[in-house]
Length: 114
Image (cartoon, rainbow, N blue to C red; front, side, top):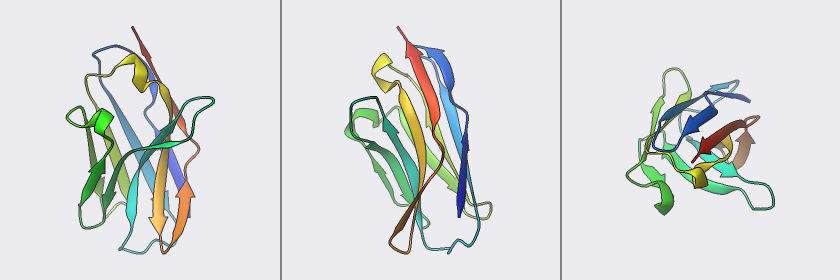
């Protein structure tokens, strides 16, 4: 299984970015995909996840600003990030939870300037 994330970049506070992640390989239809983020010196933290049945889970800090979505047919997951804040600056990692195994993408940098 491989995950390929894209869409990070530099944006001003209040702006928007959309992250995309494509999963490839032997992937069961029943899984959970999502996004985590990490800043230097801190633990990786959950941003948002979505099951193949479209149940979602968001970190409190992003509720109302970020929206996760997925395309099951294409094994893709997206993260629409609006009203970005400087504290959203981090490396964002795509995640696939499949049969008790976690898979991670390579990470994409999101930088929000004030």
